[in-house]
Image (tube, rainbow, N blue to C red; front, side, top):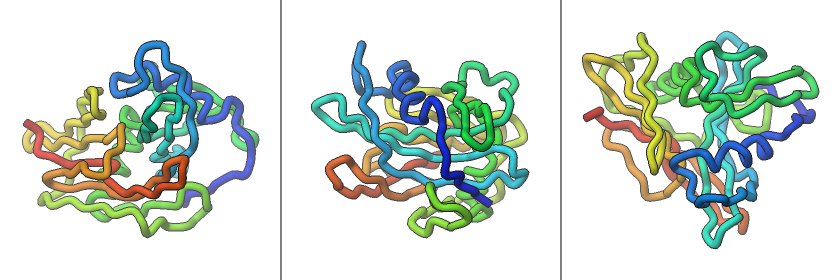
Length: 215
């Protein structure tokens, strides 16, 4: 179950993301921009093994004329994830757990497994900031038959609008992480939908994850 420690992280998650976001192809700030980030929402999933922290975080960037809300799924590990050097967001000193390796969760097999479980009703979304508390605002659906094929690592592709995870060789499915959140975005075969809040207090709700047939 998800346990939230009331402690410090140095550097903070927002500080790590401020350094990392400008290098993403879906970042809207432009060349040379310095993000000004605020926490804007999200939820967590549990790792059944109890080893990896899983968070679907939303941060709002107020540095430009238009405020953008970005989805950053992250995993927190007690040791480096082998072969995922390019997915490392950074390391941080946790006041209780010690050094944590923070990864872009699109590249972490634990997050991908629990995301597919969520879409098929096999995982319960948890509140982002409260221990052992389900989040009923998270809506997950998938209209496919049978389980997702996660026997092999997904093909991960970063684009201008999000990150695509292609699952399965025989009946390929595409999971799109909607990195720049848009309340109007929809998926043809399923979705994970919940809310976020902009810095001015405006509440929005839309898809964090979209599911399509892979072309």
